[in-house]
Image (tube, rainbow over all chains, first blue to last red; front, side, top):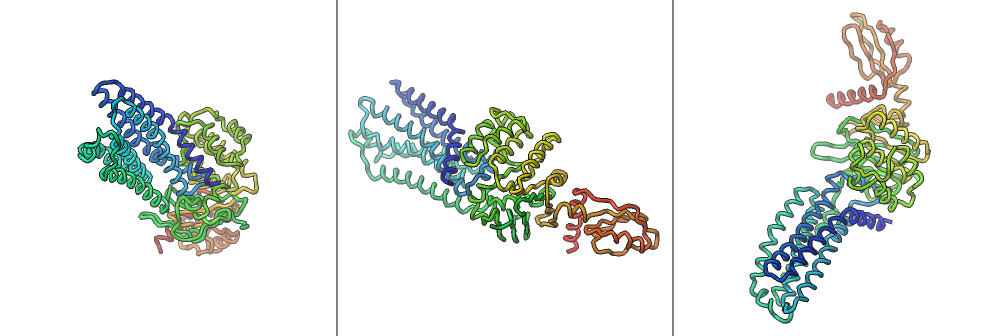
Length: 224
Length: 299
């Protein structure tokens, strides 16, 4: 019975946010269309807009899906349903993650297909692409975790600020790393130690953040 | 199965600036309990504890036979909860909310929901943000009542309503409560609303239950005696008199266990009884709170 309630809560979030998701996919698609124009400026502009679409979604979604429910006093309504605080938190985690992963996956697959189908694009770019696409996902998980744990706009804003400040630095350090950029033009993907370490770090950060979120939520005693 | 819909035994919760102390509260199945207290008395905290939304630090809570908060999911299938600070999704319609609740509750009574829509003058296609406060309260109650819960928990549902909306809401609640199997806990600081629909009354103040009794017994036992006290006469201390206020020769004695021979006792002492008046629930509530606070100060 409870799993059906959790599913109903997830579907409810999906219905409430489908416009936001459609908009972010549309923005990402426009960025990819610009990206297709054969000029260096269009390439850069498209790439920047593409990442902005993902970063903005990753920053806005936790606030809209998690914080607003508390701020707009919908939480008492939801908690009157046959669901425990932990189950509600699980539903919220699943819906928030799902709502981000749908546009993220769609746009990442579309971008990868477009880039790799360009004539003369070396496969050596694939590891860097994976690392770069992973950063907005890591940032989103940190912001979503902070929103779920902190339950306040302050926590959400602080996490957003920290993550958004680090994207630029992160990308710069990755692109400047000779062990990574040295293989960009390789005809085959090079999965060397720095690449695997960064990818592993991204996966570990995601798992750690989700784990902490679930653990803290399950120990909360007062919910409303 | 226990005959009690709600059972709180020695329940306590400590916050930095507020403590809910040793709450004992019993609501028999099929009864309507009015929980009256001033703002900040602990009504909402008590209600949140019995719904499992806040975990008590001390004591045992059972709702419809389920231990709370451990068994809150099982209990909440049969609880309908509405509170003054509960809000629906502003950008969505009443119909969307009805569909959402219907997808969760197999017992959702669609014909009754349609009846309530008409009775409350609501339109299903209306968005919540376009509704007045009164309409929002009615929409929330509709979503709660059409689930056909065994226990209704209403935390200040009539706060902020205009007299007409309040009357409509109370009329519907009274109709709902004719179902003898349904239990209700109704909290408010508006004693008139509680007096209108409750079987039993519990007064709460500063985190403590100060009295709990059958409503008729309250109204029956509490009296105000207006006395004239000649100079040199002192009024005797009578059991059941909880306070005497005197200004010159006129005195008012408040009884919480009135007995007809009280008047005789005052007359025998030399005082003259001008009148014996019944008290409204609001007057009883205020007198009870004042007495409790005086006792607290003395202690």
